[in-house]
Image (cartoon, rainbow, N blue to C red; front, side):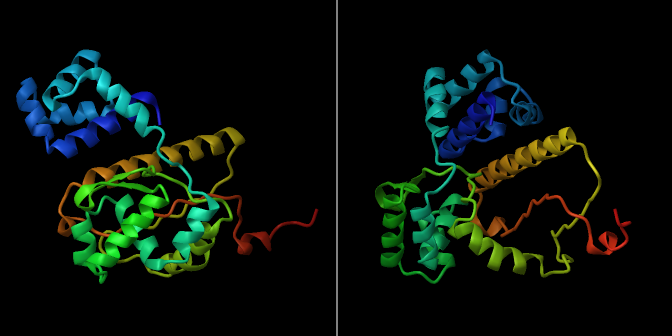
Length: 245
């Protein structure tokens, strides 16, 4: 993530925390709401505009930069031990996923069959694992990045391969909101690198959307699974037709 993208992400988080909408910013700056949305979507801030928005939030521009730098230090990967502890406790894994998705403590205990005392214990474990910083009244600060990656060949990846991905793909993808598209071709190394960069950027954008939507009520959000994959591969049907060399 570039520096300006990181600053934008931090700014959006502050707006959510303060419950300040794009509409309110537009009114304060005497601009259209569409214009404000475009500025945030394209990261097209001038220093003057950033300072104006910081004034609306009630912070100094320098504070925004400091907060942004701190957020860059969020965990991108868990350790082997962290992943293993999550895998050994399904309820702990569930809560880890919930906090990454921005669920509140009350949303978790109202939606899942986990009693309050147990949920507090699990939140404390997530704090000990440095996935969250537990705050008073069961609030928390997320210490892991939205677009974190599981360890290669680690416990979470093995679980994803054996359980999640197999069941995820075992569908006709005809439900509302579903989408499936397969594309193949022969590409140069430079094109392959470009595709990988674009896919990585898309995962970051999707992660930001997940973070932004966490401010909405639970009833307004739907569980969705997204799978991005690319590898050297040719269908066996085609392989059989190759000439012997």
